[in-house]
Image (cartoon, rainbow, N blue to C red; front, side):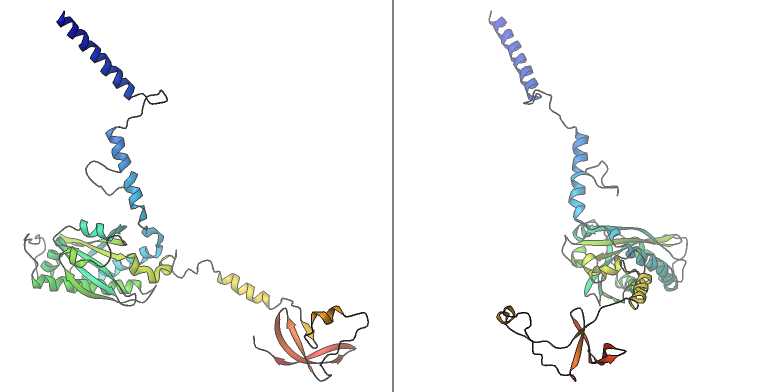
Length: 348
């Protein structure tokens, strides 16, 4: 009998667990509760398998990154970087005496702190200053481009891969050669901005540790232009970072849709309006004299009251256009009509 009781109790416990589980999936309204799957949770949070693939952000991740200003709000910046690519292709060919092709991979907007944390090391980070704008920018040269430039400038053969020795600091010769290349890039960047605003980008310092290349708060937004430099079988990447704070003095110019835009002004309409204004009729009032009296005296006026003015036949008459005093003249008579001859033109 004890065995039977234990069996019955076990059955009752199973039934109770089943009822409890059913109650957990029934909400207060009596309907089944919606349970999110792992894929839906990942989509909500913005996570994807295989890490970030450079695609569009979704979910909470997109909301958090929504504070960054998109570079597309500065249309003229693409024109500047396009000019930079063309000029760099020519200047680097002269600098290396080799066939160099420069291409623009993409232009993105990113927070400065996130960019520093994502820089693949080893690399060289060059800090430059915009003299007229009184702010800084950053140029990052990856190890592949560093070794390629050193190999080309020191007479390395074509068709052989640049020799890379990982785990050692860059030598003084390598730093000096890369510094010369960066000065060429900065010269081209200054020339690329010339049609918009005259600015001089000057080399400041060269760092290999991203922590020492900090030029602004981590939360500040910045624009990153990624350039690809190919020298036949050699080459690498160069990234140009310009904070939005640096571009603030020329923000209005970068907002133009095309070079020389006047933000709604139409020169043809302005000229037409100026021409038609010469044929506009305006009314003039000739004021013989003015005097100030009290309101009580005005209220005492009756029909036939006489107002004694201080003007004489030789006094000048004031000519008003609206509220503005325009001329002073003498009053007379011509062809049986009262006339005023302009004697003085008053400046506004």
